[in-house]
Each structure stands twice: as structure tokens, then as C-alpha cells.
Amino acid sequence: MSRWHTMAQVSTASKDSDALSKDLKTHGFRFVGSTTVSAFMQAVGMVHDRLLECSYRRVVTR
Image: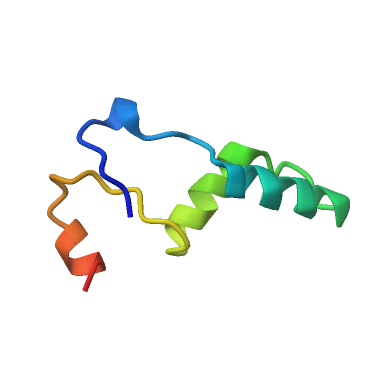
């Protein structure tokens, strides 16, 4: 779970998204850079990068 206070602190990629991106490319996927994979991971709930002040954060962490 993140501890971000501002959007400037949130990264657009991570070691996990780098690894998943590389693995997908070895299986023939295209246009799956680390930033795209990081956004996908956030969208499906694999990572939790909400700001501490986000009103939805409390709902997601239950």
C-alpha cells in the first residue's frame, strides 16, 4: 500500500511492472511498456497507488 501525499510522488513504473512488461514481450505482446503495465496493474487492483487524501482509499482498503 502506498503512502503518497502528492501526485508527483507516484511513480509511473515499478520493478514489478518492468518484469511483467519484459515477460509479456517474450510471449509476443506489443505496446506493453512498463508504464502501460503499471496502469493495468493499478486498474485491476494488483497495486494500490492512491493518495493518502483520496476519499476512495478507505473503500478500497476494506
